[in-house]
Image (tube, rainbow, N blue to C red):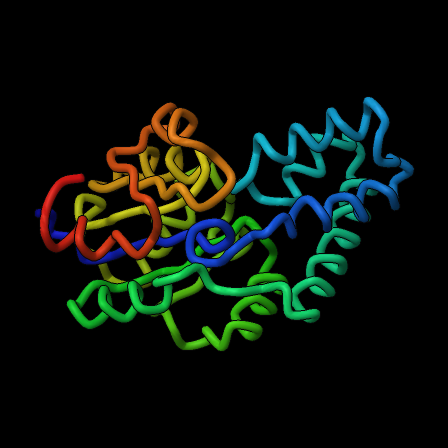
Length: 227
């Protein structure tokens, strides 16, 4: 169907099960800044966290707290809480994720795994899953310049893998921010999966060219035809 040479795949919610870990880690980070569960301020912040799933986490905390010092403190607390959850065995791959990457690479398609988390958190997840060598490349916002919805991680993946054109790129994710990133990068395929944070309407609003039940359906889309 498409002459795809690079697939840029999101992690949490797309290839890795979230299972509410982001919200749990946020609870601890917010509590450290004096925002207790149950109050109006907490609910407002939690709504923003849900709406901006996929965005760089430090960017989210800068918006929530306004002050750089508080944002950095909240981000550190978030990362520590998330690492504890990962280390406790709460991190697992979504069904068919590793197999999908293997199929794509076997067909000559480069694969980049991307995240809105920091490099330390991304590496923690990769180690927990044994995925250090699964993909051709892994990227976080700090590796590229800016996180989603900017195109930086997709374009960095294109450059680092030697992909010739944005028309040879597929971007896959579970959030509206993933879709915006793919659109901003000019990717030929911008596929939303229904296993994560955002539903069909939000993915379509973000610019999804295709919707898939899960990442396991991606090879069929790329190799066999339209969905």
